Image (cartoon, rainbow, N blue to C red; front, side, top):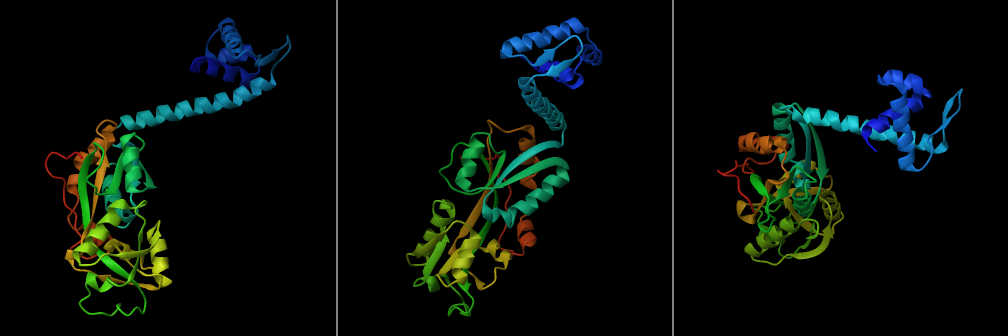
Length: 319
C-alpha cells in the first residue's frame, strides 16, 4: 500500500465513478481499477460495491475513506512544514522553559527570535529542568531553558542569566519591616520551598545559601509551583526564598524582602542536543544567545540591575 493507491481510492470514493475518477487523475480506467483491486486484496475486504449502473462504498470502504483523508491531509501538512523549514528563517522551535524563566529569560529570548526569524513558530512547554534534559536528549525538545546543574547528560549549553534570591514573607510579619534584612534573620522561621523532586537545582541552592548564612533551613512545607508557595506564605505556613524575578508576580498578601548578593544566586542556561539539533536550533544558538544584553532581562521584568545576563563563552561548552 502506498500514497498513490490512497489518492486513487479517495478519488474513486468521491466521484463514485471509475471513469470520472480516471479522467480527473489523468490516467486510463483499467490501471485505476487494477490499483483498487490490489488495494482490496491487500486489505482483505471489498471497499466498493460495483454494478453496471453505480458504484457505492461498502461500510468498510466508508471507514477507510475517512482514515485515508486524514493520512493524506497529514502528508500535505508534513510536506508544507518541510518546505517552510527549508527556508532560512522558517520552522518550528520546540522550547522547554523552567517556571522561573517565564519571568525574565523567555520574554527577551522570544523577542529576539521573532526579530531574527519572523516566520518561526515557537511552541513553549513549562517543564521541570530535569524533564527538559531528558526531552532534549531524546529529540523531543529543540532547546531547554533550565536551572544550571553540573551532573547533566552530554548536552550543549550556554549560560543566559543569573539572579539573587528574595525572601517572601506574609504581609504584617514581624520581619517585614526589619532594616538591613539578612538571610540569617530567617534561621528560626518555618520555611516553604519547591520540592526537591520538582526543583532540585533551586532546592539545593537554597539549602547551600542557608548553610552559608549559618543555619540549617527548617522546611515544613513543599510546593510544586511558585503560586503555591506564595499562597502558603500568605496563609502563614512559613516564609520562603525564591528567585527575585518572582517578585514581578505581585502576589497579594505577601511581601518581598531583598537579600544581599552573598545570599546565593540562581543560574539559568540554555541546553540543546548536538545530535538532534535542527538547522534552526543551531542558528539560534549561534546568532541569538551571544547577543543577549547583560541587563535586558532585568529591565524586562522590573528586577534589580544586579540580576544580569552573560554571553556564551568561546566554544559553547558541553556538560
